[in-house]
Length: 172
Image (cartoon, rainbow, N blue to C red; front, side, top):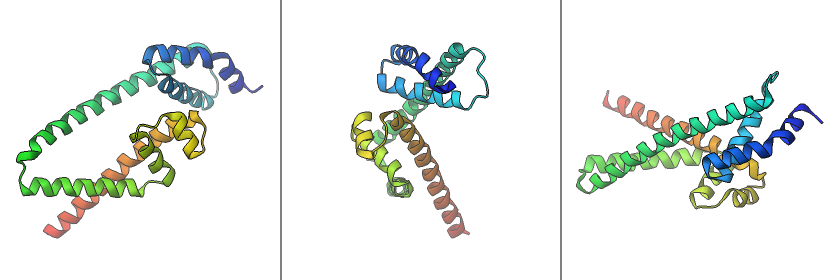
């Protein structure tokens, strides 16, 4: 048995149990545990395996909580903008249409699996259903979604930057 197999066999159940209690979501706990073991694979040597695994998992939970706070703030800002939308002028409506176009192009630019994973999750499918549809392991769904979200954000930012650059050149 390899070191990582031994590590997984020894600590996976306890780590997932801890994370499930902390997060209240078994799928999310499995995702964090998976990322923790992926990071363990990258380590040359683990001095205190148990404490290292739980510390990394706790840090990942903290990082995800920070991301969630940022997402909530962003959603609150979007909701506020939507409430103001009924009084917007033609310039604001045009800007929103351009942003929607940028988002659509960013989504279209993703790899098929990433796009499909995001859209399935958006439709409310759970990890086992997404895994079955995509033909991947349930434990890989979280990583696939995380990667897809990151790539979508990068593609969207690139679309916005290209549009701004084109607008700058047109104004010159």
